Image 1 (cartoon, rainbow, N blue to C red):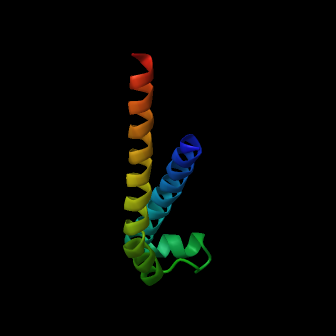
Image 2 (cartoon, rainbow, N blue to C red):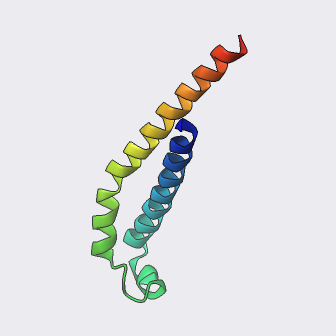
Length: 80
């Protein structure tokens, strides 16, 4: 069960990081991103999404670290 949770948190953290990079690029290079997204990702929307993504990113990373460390501790005890 914990392995599945660890995988899901890593996938969600990766997706959040990708969105974080895209929205950060949308803030700095907003004209280019508006052309690529056909006007869907504007500078103001990129900034709003970028500002709100930090909380889920930290949550997914902390959950991933917690389950990874607990799995590592169990494996370390099992090898003894």
